[in-house]
Structure formats: C-alpha cells, structure tokens
Image (cartoon, rainbow, N blue to C red):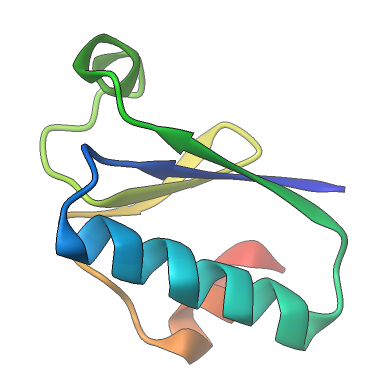
Length: 77
C-alpha cells in the first residue's frame, strides 16, 4: 500500500495536486492512502520550501508545481 502525502495549506494548486494524485493512483490500480499535511511545522519536516508538494512513502517527489498525470504516475509507481 502506497502512502501518498499532499503537502500544502489548502490552496487551489494543493487541491488540484490531490485530485490528480488520486486519479493517477486509481488509473494505476494501486492500493493507497492519502494524507493532507497542512501544518507548516509538519511541512517543514519534509524540508519543503514551496507548496504544493507530493511525498510518496515519506519521500518528496515534487514540490512547487502540479505535475502532469503521466509524471504523477511515474512518481507513484
């Protein structure tokens, strides 16, 4: 089971990243949990300075932008 974490304070880009991440995981047919990390203190633990960000199994894969669906699939799989 993949652990997908969306790091962000709830801005429009953060919400878009969550939607697209869930879509990519569904299309890949993988089991996953998704967690929103919105506390600045918790986001800083990932050493991320720009949101939105995506962490897969506690490893930051992208930050500061919303990647394409294909990019997300590569990051998740």
